[in-house]
Length: 237
Image (cartoon, rainbow, N blue to C red):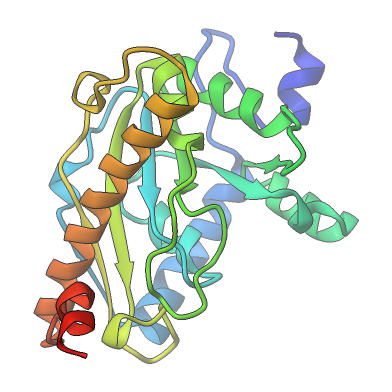
């Protein structure tokens, strides 16, 4: 991959072929930590589940704009994010998030974000991705998209599932308790993808979402929220 393409995809590489943490990312992270502690009481559970080396896909549900910051704080390495293309329409916003290491994902089948994610993972880096592909305004889990499993299949990267849960299961909000519950690593072998077909990708995505759902339920129980089985609730009606 040429130098210009690395620059376009926000990936900086050292002379010895390793990923280089972006200076802007370092600054924002330093500023963000105290603000998060001050305005969003957040408890991180399971940080020990995140390997300190190797290609990783941090995979979470998504309800609030601050979720990428919370995801980035679960470990110390730079996280490169897959973000929807709409966020890059304004030049100022595009410059800001590109300098944080974000790649645009085009809904119409563009490849820039995918190529960027593959580049990071092939170099042993960390990619953050929200499996639902959009924000859930209510905090309820949405249908998973296959992007994370495609990246895992192509690179052999380990998936780290996590659930970001605000008060009462709602999206994370300022001045309310938030739990980031991090699950055990899921290897490519555990995902069990026999090929790169759409069916295999969707099945593997559901496996990851099942883990995220379990982590979310654990967080809700810690918050004292009574879990209701919707199927049982429907039968009672």
